[in-house]
Amino acid sequence: MHALSISHLKKSYKGRVAVDDISFTIEPGEFFGFLGPNGAGKTTTIHCITGIAGLTEGNIQLFGIDVVKDYREARKKVGLSPQEFNVDIFSKLWKILDYVGGYYGMRKEERISRIEELLKQFELEVHKDKPFMELSGGLKRRVMLARAMVHNPDLLILDEPTAGVDVNLRLMLWRDLERLNKEGKTIFLTSHYLEEVEKLCSRIAIINNGKIIADAPKEVFLKDGNKLEQRYLELTKEESI
Image (tube, rainbow, N blue to C red; front, side):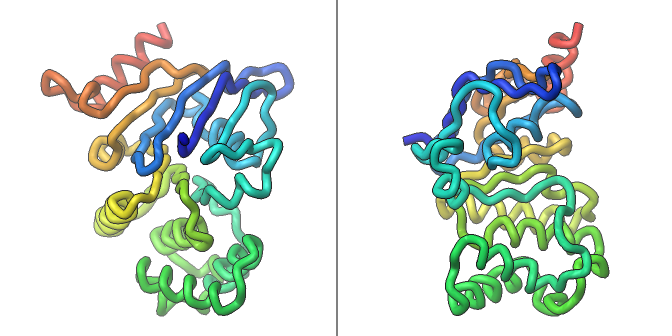
């Protein structure tokens, strides 16, 4: 069973095609990088996977569960750390995490235990009673990751998870993500930091103008001494000509 299966996905907005007949699968335990220029269709694809946006055509399944026909069960399988800070900025950190746990039907004792675990993991314990708006950019990124993981989803989707954070925090987050993946967590990552994708991901797909233009193990992009950045620029340039 695939962790994620996308078949002939098409998404249009008011006549504009944002994602144009894409298909790919992700296997359980894979660390998958999804790259593309701004407006290429990355976030739209993520929104279709997580139910934020409806599908115009096609089919998406999470661990064999149809994201449209059985949305509630499918949603339990995935955690999303979005690019934007879509939280109540006046809410305290622990309340943000507690709300998500309640949304997924976690019992109070279970929520408390899980939140304490995540606060410790992301070094947020001393900040737990602070309103989100008072946190630094790096702390806010940690909160978004913790929120995505409250219900311990099988698939973790990270949309620009280290945007705007300092080098030390980025390295810390990389270690956390590598550990999670080694423990069996399936991770779907989008990032404009190509060195981040090159370090973390085992397989990479590139989307441009709504279409998948490359999908291969990382080693294919790095053969002959290439860097991922070099191949990415070559591929997206060729596609745009």
